Amino acid sequence: MTVRARLGIPYARQHRFGAPEPVPLSDDAVAGGGFGPSAPQTAGHALGGIVPGMAVGAIDEQACLTLNVWSPASPGPHPVLVWFHGGSFVIGGTAQPVYDGARLAAEQAVVVVTANYRLGALGFLDARPLGGVANCGVRDCLAALAWVQAHIDRFGGDPDRVVAFGESAGGGLLLHALTAPGARDLVAGAIVQSGATFATLDEERAANVCAAVVARAGLTDAKALTALPVDALVAAQDAAMTDLLGTIGMMPFHPVIDGEVVTARPHEALAAGAFAGRPLVVTTTADEMRLFLPPAEPPTPERLVRRISRYASIDEAAAAGAVAAYAADLGTDDTSAIWATVFSDVEMQLPAHAVVSAHAAHGPVHTGLFTWNGPTVGACHGIDIPFAFGNFGGGWDAFTGAVGDRRVAAEHLSTVVRDAWAAVARTGDPGWPVAPATMLFGAKPTVAAAHPAMARASAAFGR
Image 1 (tube, rainbow, N blue to C red):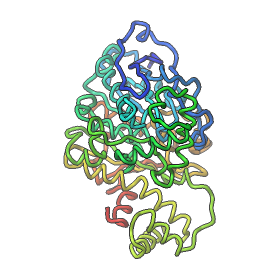
Image 2: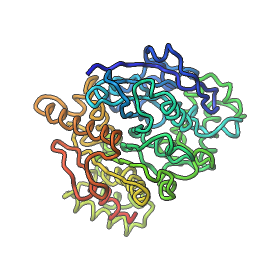
Image 3: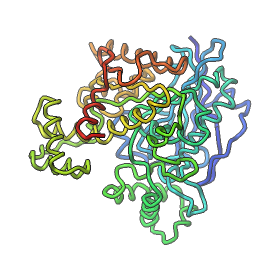
Image 4: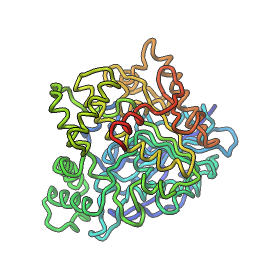
């Protein structure tokens, strides 16, 4: 099937730390162009090298709010899938080749949209004390989805069958955006790949993030950030991330509860029915945090117990019980392997379980676990990205192990994923039963009675 790509379409304009302002759709935009610039970020950022193809080209603070549309040539209206990229809320962009929507659009007869949003301090600093707003990046997400509602029919899309999907920070962005007041009217469903966290900021923690950026920028007045050259602002934000690691965590630039756009942490908002009546698909990978763990000497069993006690905020007796449970579940007493799994489960599986449990009373929720192993990284965070689009170029084939004899299995798994994601857009159902049943996305995809990682984490930590 022939696909037409219209790239770099502006969906909003913005002033620093201000809410996005919709822009009219021009005939030139409908005719198509090239990818727009990404949001400002550090070239060669350390996070950009841990998975393939994360380097971006042009960046531009004023012109980064663009999106791209791939439309089937056949008559519509077609279901629509809208993608939000990951990158820890500080890197990434839609021009990265792995996010090319042509294959997904052609194969599944869906319209594929990919959208940029503001990153780092520009997107996630609480700028209300500076005369701006909070959650600029979340507002950008909502503005992009509003643009889709208003204009996707001109591209062959059906505004009544719009499903948003995203991975990592893109999935977390969605969870915050789609629980905003009125956001449920913008989409028919959502797919969140490794995007649930408990890291939503409150006002006090957000103020600490702002203070760290101000200090690293060498300023005494936070309002001076509004006029700081963008390169200096990005440098200050990157330096502040190191300062904030011990107090705020790995992603200090994160949505904040502002009482306007983000009214609660996502699982709390979902429990209150914020996304009621809409299908939600929540997936994780089996070895989420393995991607971020450098080689290290295995901790002693005693040190592991103390580490887990501190990390999971439980007493040492409970931590020792968790270690025993994980050793039995994994079939090993290797403390490094146990720590990697506990780290993954507390960081990613428990928040995902909370989201699933919260939404289950209000709408259909389906879960999935990616068990496909890359040759050196296992089923790590991000390994699912190329399977959703069917794009294994740019180093993703080697990273995922989709080479040689395994390429056929990888292509089959990718087809299973694309079929499921498109089915959510078409009908609201990915093709397997609601939770606790879960799809295991591995070399031989199969449905299990429960999500093994979420169930293990919930049993071990009582959450």
